[in-house]
Image (cartoon, rainbow, N blue to C red; front, side):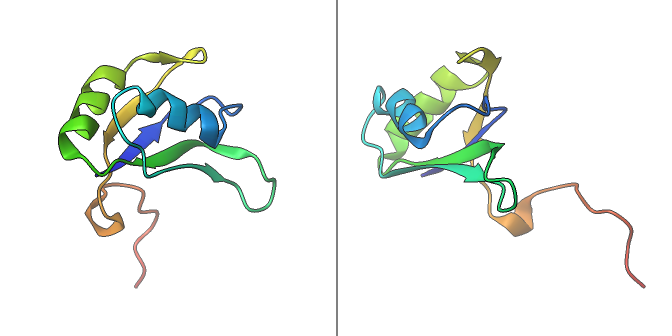
Length: 92
């Protein structure tokens, strides 16, 4: 399962993210999304866990929990076309 992790402190590394989720099971990958121009974290990332029940347990335990001083948002990642909002002005 692909898991979205938001509201991350900008200082969090991929290793930190992996370690937090590894408490709940196997972690295939952990990625903190970085700004291409500045090289700084954008404050969110993704964790891939192959076992769905372990992933659900991690989501339930970590969502809204304190992580390095910030309450993180954790939920199952949705494909880009299923996300809501963020539109800007319509194009005609």
